Amino acid sequence: LDNDGNAFFDYQGQDNVFWDDQLSRLTKIGRLGDTIMFKDLPNNMRLAKVANRFNDKTSQGQSYVVVCGSRNEVANDPSLGDFGFEIIEHFQNVDINPAAHRESVFFMIALEARDQLRQLMAWQLSQLFAIVPLVLTGGWDHTENFLNYYDIFVRHGLGNFVNILREVTFNPLMAENLTFQDSKSGSYLFETTGSYTHADENYARELMQLFTIGVFLLNDDGTKMLNENGEPIPTFSNDEVMSFARVFTGFVQSQPRGNFEENDSSWNAIDELIVDPIYHDKFPKHDLTGGYIGDGYPLCVDLPSRTFLRKGATYRLLGDSPRPHAFIDEGTPMNDGPARVFELGENSRLREILCNSVNGSCQFQ
Image 1 (tube, rainbow, N blue to C red):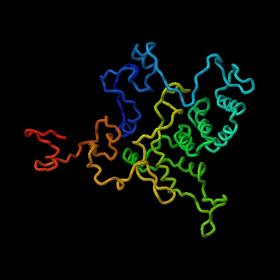
Image 2: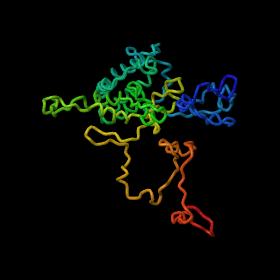
Image 3: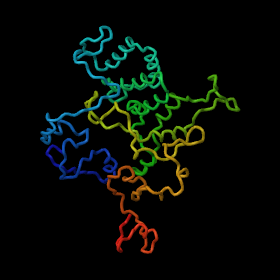
Image 4: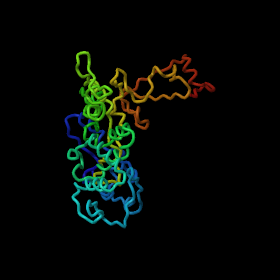
């Protein structure tokens, strides 16, 4: 809507290619003429300025919203007042530059915490899984998102390394830092843009090279494993990087919410990323040992014979598109063009069974 209240958007482009490419970025709330309740708007649109613009009175001062806290968040202690962390004099009312908040919190814990071994491990791990604040959204003046990231290593510093890898992978700061957030599969990009583009390889490469196995195979004593020519044996090639990069497609931020340090309602650097099935690469990815890694689904050859004909099997018409809308959202109307329909003949035995005729009239089952 423009400032005059006109509900029409006049697109002046030469064709619809750009419009189609950017359509997923638009928040869809209804059709022209629909009445939409303020409380039914998406989270990122339930704003005071939206309510004021449409003179919505029911959303202002007459109801309350209960929101969940972030992981490990504790309630504020009102008796402490409006304070900042101060290293030397502890909890004093001081004015600290926003860029120094997270450092102040860190030093307070490093000097005062009783679990010093855990804190030491967390610090060491944070140096391995390093991020660069100045290249991140809100990197200069935000605190909560960085403390939330650092807490991964506090939680798992004395635990399982796999848990660290999982949480780091799904953390929005790492996804932005190593550029795999919003990475899209090659098949999606080819279908929507017609271009041949590989998935972002940054995180896949760093995951192996820096975070886990390194660049060369090692013996049990830590020395490099050598081939018959006396040369070190690489742990991976660029083929493995390209394959693993396809694993990290479709990672997008969770829906924005309230109750954390952010005024931008379109951004959420606290909650874990989610995987958008439209953008995610659905094809097999080979591993480091000649096999394949998968998404947890059984192979078709491993299913019992004729599973699709067994009792309880369900069928949905998906249309002609290799990326059908109805594949992920049953409530989305199909707009993939005319569907090809197989019609059973009047003498078909299958049609007779499905018809379940009663008094000459089909009661399809």
